[in-house]
Image 1 (cartoon, rainbow, N blue to C red):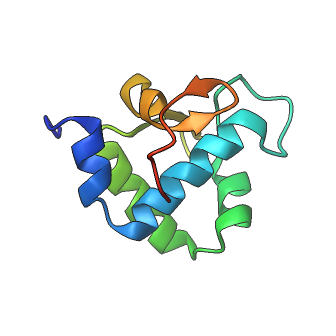
Image 2: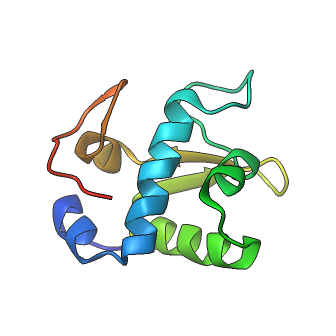
Length: 104
């Protein structure tokens, strides 16, 4: 568990992890898989949108979980990925009020 402020974690995050986090936020807001609970992104929709291979995707997802940026619930293949409240507060989006300073 990373105790640093979210803004600090994001600033030092690998670029691929920042991009994946932003994509998860977009998919959680308006991804193509429906119906699904509000605020949820699923691995199939994220993988389709990001173009990463499955292994690299899960490595980056694990990094995001370890740094308290996302939470994953459920078992494969039905995982539900959600932004943590702290990460959601930092990311701009239609259902979030995060600052525009976040860069993918």
